[in-house]
Image 1 (cartoon, rainbow, N blue to C red):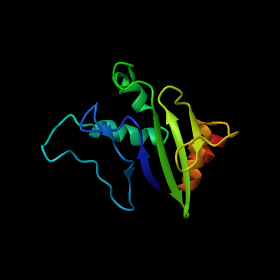
Image 2 (cartoon, one colour):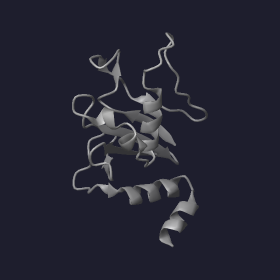
Image 3 (cartoon, rainbow, N blue to C red):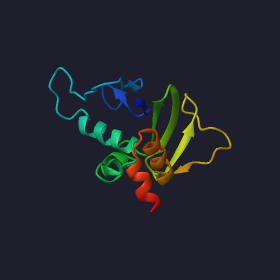
Length: 141
């Protein structure tokens, strides 16, 4: 299961605020909700696109293009950890080199001498861990 997502560009209190701690996920239902002031533009849809990005999607790149412009957020890494059968797996995915996934330690430092994995291999890893064999069998056909 997805355990957490972290990005140094996630801020508390707006663009110039302090960096937000990692967003934690728990077993069962997790919800993305707005603030108590009922603000509309606080990043709920962007967060859902980032979750999709963590699972191998590309909507965050293609549908949030303005975010990636240097005058806005610019280049950044989305860091995330999964837990399967009591073992943690940490990765980062860059919004520019988004076709590869970097295997990291728990502090999101790339593991030395470990080449990035392709998006296809990463998707196969997730399919195996989530026991989604349809994707793996279809890809191998």
